[in-house]
Image (cartoon, rainbow, N blue to C red; front, side, top):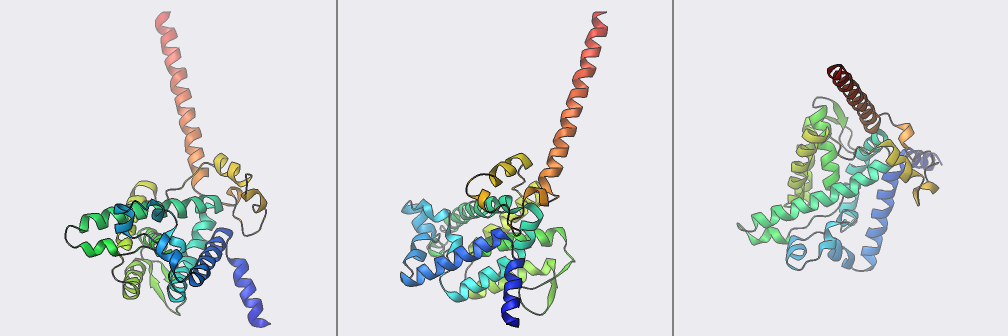
Length: 268
């Protein structure tokens, strides 16, 4: 019972969006096993099929497919340790938007990268992108760029590393498991762009927009759960953005008032 209680406690500590990823990925893995990997072959992003056979659906949900239990364990383990912190910082709705939008952008960059490298070798067009390794790697890169010397536990292993060493170690492990992982290079490119232009998180949605989605189908049935992080529970991105927007509007109003006074004085 003690072990069962610990498992229940761990599950309860996981946020709603991260649970969705874990459950969905596990179900996809089970279905893939029963269909002899046919779903994996249909949905993973293989540039040769995505480009030349116009199978564009491969850009949207390859992250939910992992191929086998070994890959799904490593992929979701890394994702779990990064995703919970991100979801708690920005909320469940921005987190959902983030994982799907990030994946789409990464897959597009990955396909373009493979197409460019195909002039050197055609083999890169047969490489595959799958699993949540890409998004996990971006979260690690953002952490490394923000807090380089902060120590964090390396997956489930009993030792910690400075954040700046976490991405190289993860990149090495992933390439040992599956070589080459060119999609991790695409993730690195995206992570640098996101860090420079969006302070490490692109999906900074307005509070009004997030609230509207929270009370819309299907999230209205889940937003009252304790593991569902609403916009009222976070003190991050959109709150700051709205404060800046209000300040901007106030400044514009002051400028307009000043200009009106100047015009009145000129008329006098």
